[in-house]
Length: 225
Image 1 (cartoon, rainbow, N blue to C red):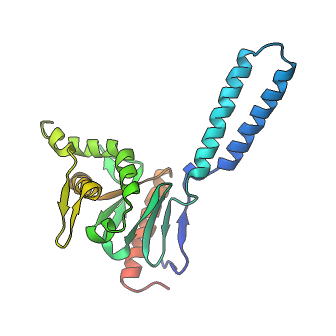
Image 2: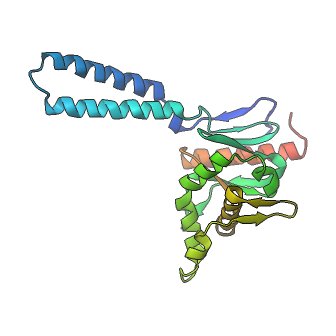
Image 3: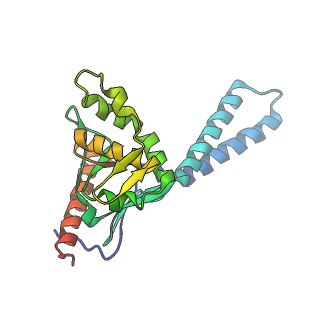
């Protein structure tokens, strides 16, 4: 199958869909409820519950609108993960493959990437985004550490954030060192270094990984048409 990557391929997730509709509908319900209060002698329980629900709906709609329209993009340069706090990129030559990580034989809600060039990834990784990813994926990291500890006694040691990390050519400190150490720990237990959360079906996720891998091979081999 030949993939034309001259134009970017954009992948939209469920998190950003329908934000405007949810926000507008919730706002309309809130307005109707507020107008109806002018004819009510006192605030009824259903009024209060309706206003709370409408408020939650507006917040949910606003949160959806704050999400990037496309959470993943790939083109001739590589794969980009779009997060509301920033973006990272993996060039085609900096990773070996993508796939769906599993736990106890069940697919996890992530796409994983096997990174081969830590430097090209870490050097362009925004610090703010690194912090957010470490926070959001902490449960994944803890589970990977738990799998790597036969007796459970090593968990506290592995969960301690590293203050320094070195590759063959670079040394990293602080946030990037902690992030790189997590990459190594995750790779040791899952086979993948970096992860992108997805809200697609398992079949759609597998197909997306297949397309990314095909695109990488074609770019590496200079066979894109």
